[in-house]
Image (cartoon, rainbow, N blue to C red):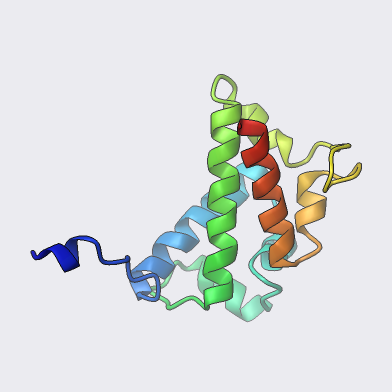
Length: 133
């Protein structure tokens, strides 16, 4: 393996990357207790047919938007696991609790993220990163 291969970016467009991303996504959705309708919104407003195809964890090349959304959710999950390292259940409950801080302004993080925009996921991740310090 040469130096160029060593520092190559992972191929996020590969079908295997899609399967790994979806596996993560569905595992976190189960921990958060999200409904299929909520999951479809978080994935970018995908239709039922696509959602059920994804649930089978296929080797699939996910659209960039979907990978970006799952990446933000990974960051949110990681931050919550760090913040609530002594109580993982609280990490999963946090997304459902009302939060007075900006950008949530009284909504839960999940309600905020369910507006469906990528920026809502990014805002949630930025908020948690700032809390982590």
